[in-house]
Length: 361
Ligand code: PHE
Image 1 (tube, rainbow, N blue to C red):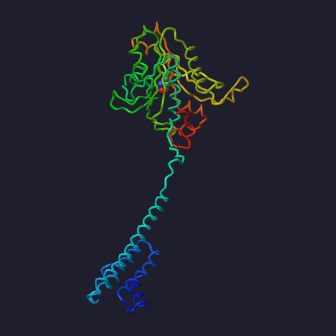
Image 2: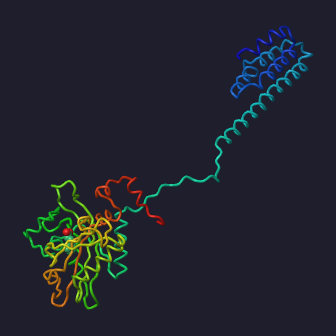
Image 3: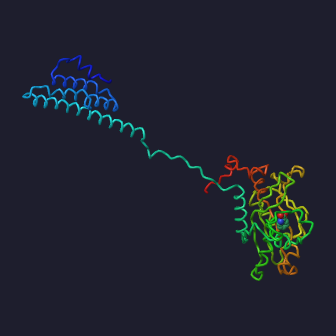
């Protein structure tokens, strides 16, 4: 566009008077301006009214006008100049408003539209099982104690009837912090701690102790060095194996529903006598199920508290008896949800974990 005004001037009014010339510029500006952008208008302004602009140079020739006419011509020319300026100003502000409106339209935010759902977490399936176990036992009058993951050799082993150099310690090799302190291998460590402080005059001791335990298990890739247990212990007068059986039956029925069979197998633990291992059927069974069709899965170890364990806590085994069990909540979750690989619980695969989202959290 540069020089377009000047070219037009030279063509249209080559020998025009000052008034003719400024009017020609006005005509041209009024023609061109409506089609220009803000930037174009600014350029046109410079070309018309700038220091070196056409109007400015036309006005410079005022000095050649005879003195008696100069005032009049000057005033008239200035009027036209002002008209040009006013046009450029108003066109520019029109465009600025248009631009603002377009921007407001483009950035419009409809606050009434539905929001985007925020993804929230949910309790891990193993935590859900633990909560359910805690709720059940609390409803039966048990107390819940957690204990420490760092335990003394005394409570983890010796008070569990596992003196130093006892061969059964091999089953539970662990991580030692020093010869007397270790990462607990079993929640059973809480048994003696609770028996030590319980006042049996007030009634039986009934407790569960959920938590994480550790074992040095480096020869088998399917075992983890860290896993969960829930310990259970009842000590009082006339506590029998039948109480243990009834307690476990109610636990299994509460967690899995009816229809899962339970089986006791004789076993050995240094701190229980007799000792058993307990299996639950993976599948639902009834009277017509053939024994070979029952798929057993071992879920816990249990037994009657060994008299030595009672004595070490100052409890008279002639007056008191008790049962104890230690279960693996991971196994429980497998049966409850039909999961066949325990590693799924620890892989942090959201697609897997999402299936256990709790409603009403
Ligand atoms: N503490 C045993 C284990 O870790 C389980 C158990 C607990 C067995 C209580 C009997 C009684 O294997």
